[in-house]
Length: 223
Image 1: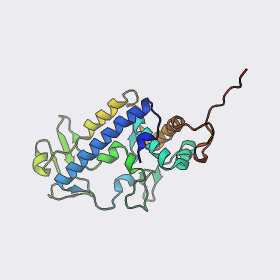
Image 2: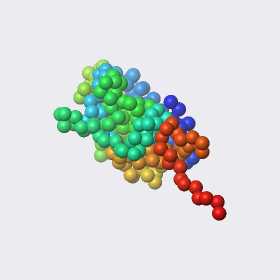
Image 3: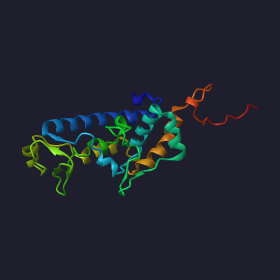
Image 4: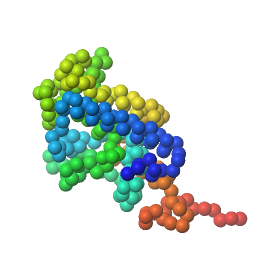
């Protein structure tokens, strides 16, 4: 899906275009690290999504909202009206509401997933001195058998230095700096973003969008 064509030209659309570029770069960095290091997730594993609800910035929420508006408009209207609840499991874990157990790929919004979801298990953090530190997820595999390393030892251990989450996170914040400090849990952020995105998508005067509610403002009568 071309998420960027969901919205009319606007400041938000321009910022989502910049976000899409950042996402492509993060995906490429993760793919290169995975290929060169031999670090991998088990096939079909979704444990990181089953017990974790990410906090995301409003711009990422808008990207998800645009994807939902294009992929499943009835669902988009439903979330905007009724909200989205984090998923509680029998074992007490609380996870992402956009996760599907019956799908081997699990993520129902994979193309639009936030930065943390794209980089989780394949990115480094920085210690207090700024040195990158990486550890393989407890369920992940490492072709070379090494499970963790930091600083200069990363290249020796994994053959390549992993991308650093904080570095790309700083770039994310710079796209829309005025909202970058307003992180919220994904369910809350997506509901708020859908109200904004569905308004911008708009509707032709003669047609209600795919049977959705008529949210056009009432026009005053001519005097």
